[in-house]
Every structure is written in structure tokens, then in C-alpha cells.
Length: 144
Image (cartoon, rainbow, N blue to C red; front, side):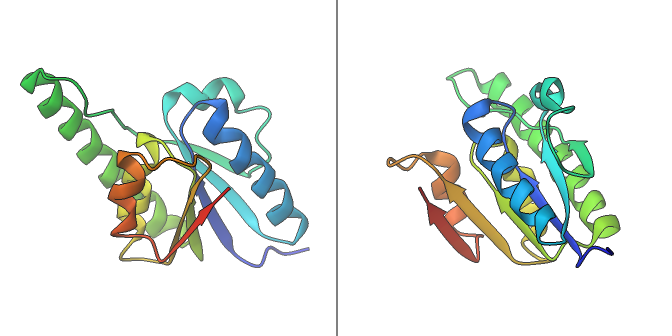
């Protein structure tokens, strides 16, 4: 069966964000979609378990702390991730990008904003900075 199109899932490289993305990937694949994952380098240890057709490692960083040099460094790393994600999306042409939380999803969701619809899923009851940041860009928000 030919895929209906591509859907990009973006999740941080920890189980709390990655495993909900994996559950959605299984369902989307069963419904005939091509699913690709954009994540940070930490998720490479789960690469063999993720059901998507491809895993893209995108640069990301957590802009925290009081050290101005670390903040600037994080900013440059996120900028690199924005460029990487945009390049991937121009090639992939996803129908939608779904973000699952954590700083590693910021570059893909921002890059996708001008190219296709975005969905932000947050599984925590309390909003955190990445969620507030995406709220400006996401076409749809979901919480569980």
C-alpha cells in the first residue's frame, strides 16, 4: 500500500516524550501514513524500536542557567537545528508536524510553522517554557 503522505513527529530523546510519539507512530502507520521522527542525539539509543521510516537527528539545546556564554551557545545550537529541520521538511514535505514536548522539539515546530500545520502535544498538567513558546506557533494543541 502506498502511503497517504508523510507526517513528522518531533520528540525529545527521553522516554517521557518519545514513547507517546511512538504510540502515535504505530497508529498512523496502521492507517497508511509514512512517519518520520525528528529528535536529538539522545534518542539514537531507541532508533531500533521506533516504528517510523526514518529518524532525523536535529541539533537542540536547553537555554537555561545564568551563564551568558551557555545561553549564547544554546541559541546558536537551536539556530543550527532550525536550519536542519527546515531542510528536512523541504525534502520530506510533511502534511503535519506533531511535537511532543521538550526543547528538542522547538526547532522542528518553528521550522514547520511556515510550511505545514503543526500540533503541540503536552502530557504534563503544568505548562513549561517550551509549551508556552510553541503556543505562539502551533495550529492545534493537545494535552493528556
